[in-house]
Length: 393
Figure: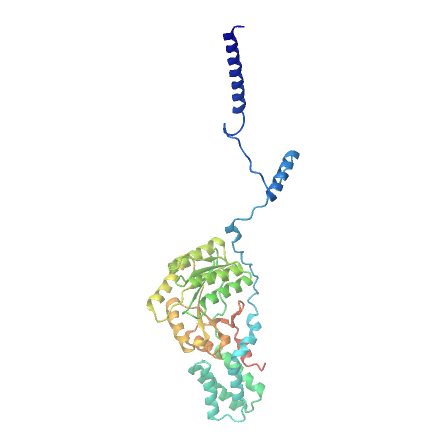
C-alpha cells in the first residue's frame, strides 16, 4: 500500500474519534471542561439524603413541613372577650350596702339626736348643723328642722320607729321632685337618642360614660360611643376599653382634633348602624373658663344638625360640696343640663348635695356612682336612698 494513502487513512480515523468524543462531552450536564462534584454528606445530613433517595426510588410523596405564622401575625393581640353586663334595673337596691356604709353616720346621727329625752334649742341647732354638714344646704336644713319641730310638738311622744318615720318623710319631701328622673335613651324614628356627658376635670366623666354604655347594653340596647375628649389621649383609650368590653363601637380621632367633628361623626355612625343610643364623652373643662364653655356649646349645636340632643348629663363629684353646685350653675347656662350623674357617693357622708342641686337648679339627680366596679352606676331611687341611710343594719 502506498505510504501516503496509509497516512491519510490514519489521520481520518483520528479525526473521527476526536469528533465522537467531543459530541459525547457536549451532551453531559454542567460546564464543559469542569466536572461537578457533590459534597459528601455526613451525620444527620447523610441520613436525610439517604431517606430522600429511597423516597425518590419508591415514588413516595412527602408532606411539606408546617410553616410558622409570620411574626406580625403571631404577635397580634387577641380580641377582648365581649361581656354580658347585668341590666340596670335593681342596681340601686343591690348597691345599698355600699351606700349605707358611707351615709349611715349622717342618718344615725340625726336619729340619735331626735330620739333624745328632751329636745331643747341646742339640740335643734345641732340637728340643723348635722344637716348642713351633709351639704343639704342652709335653706333646706332650716325647713326640715322647722317641720320636725312642729310635728314633734304636736305628736308629743317620740319612739324610735316614730322618729324614723318622721325623718324619712321630711328627707323624701326634700329629695323628691316632679322632674323626670329617667335617662332618655330611646331612639326616635330613624335617629338614635343622643346623650352628652359634661363636667369638669376629675369628676369621672369618661368612666361614667363607659358605665352608662355598659348598663344600656345590659338592658338590650345598641350603643355607639363618641370620644370627643380629644385633648387627653388617655380618655380615648379608656373609652375604647369600655366599648370593647361590651361590643360598643367607639368613634375617635387623632389627639387635638375638633371635638365637635368627633361628636358629629359619632351621631352619623349611630344613624348608619341603626343604634338605639349615642353617648358622647366631652372634654373636662373648668367652669370658670369662658372659651372652653363656649366650645361645649358648639359641640351641642353641631350635633343637633344631625339629631336632637335628648340628654345633657352633668357629672358631679359628691365630695366637692358647694363647689359642685357652682359648677352646675355655669354648665346649665351653656348647654341646658337635663340631669345629674353624682359620682363617688360611696366615699362621702355628704349625700345632701342631692337635695341642694335639685333645689337650686331644678335639675334631677338621675344617676349615682357607688363604687369603682364596672356595674356600680345606678339609676337614682330616692326611697332606696333615704331608707338606706336611716337603716340600722
